[in-house]
Image 1 (cartoon, rainbow, N blue to C red):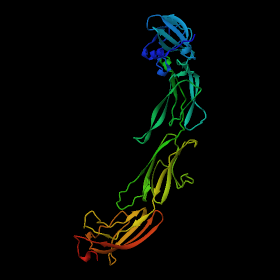
Image 2 (cartoon, helix red, strand yellow):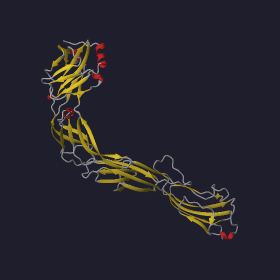
Image 3 (cartoon, one colour):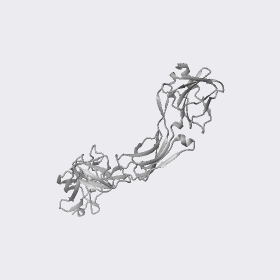
Image 4 (cartoon, rainbow, N blue to C red):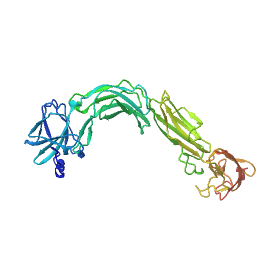
Length: 435
């Protein structure tokens, strides 16, 4: 007969959520599983074997028993009115009605779903560099139950698959070996897992019901040789704090040449071949330079954008890794020369003669007095002249510079002009210091 479930009775499920069944005649204690509230079931009981088992409701009085299956509780069949009920079939839903209230349960007869683990072997042929397939010999079908609305649900066996892999440790900038644990709901002929990054073996154990009864099983695979390859990369640019160097807007890497950048890569165990690749085409066709190392310090001197990426592969060359590309943009050159400064007039303000520059990769400057005596020379554009010659300040007046330089864009600079020293104080007025 159909069993009507009213809204009021359905609501009573949650009020009596602590209601339980007790069992006698079972070879082992049942495993109780608390299903999601949306199923309408108060508990799921997994019996090692349902044969000859009697179940009772905790009220201690006669109750009405009804049984339902895949059609849901609305189609339950009344089977007895008694304090207890002897099971005559496995995997079924039961309604217990007591004092006008209904309680819903599902019983699993595990003897119909016996687990048998025979062997686990990695697939002989590599199919995918990111996944590894494991061939399983054994039995462990899906355990299905139905909620009160007749919707099928899977009761997970929670088999435990364990193996080692590598996980990147950002604090130590290296990969560390970690145990990976994956829960398997049911046994399939082939299980696909994320490919491990180190040599390992695979262990499958369970299921949770056998473990609860002290009957857990474990199988282990032969040794597995890793082939998957990955890496973590970084780029760090050496910073310069030159107050007379012009900045390049919008450049995260690069800027004013020369730009020194250190590229680093941490790799996994299977990476037998690796290199940093440089190209002027974002598609890396062609590749202009290759450096077979995990750490590369490179100085960028040429105007334009250079693309840098890290490549790694396993010994067979079948599994490859390409890092995201780094874009290094070097700005065009520029060189400007001031025509006056005032050493010691206002300490810290305009007290050195310095060029303003950007992307100058070679530089040579000579400073002379009006008689042609060289007072100062330097090859670093960030350096300035403090107005001294042989340790003493020169007199106010006009001096001359000659500059020969080259920019990252290939531009040649040949500059000359006046340097006017004004408002100089506390200087040796004797011309002999510059003559």
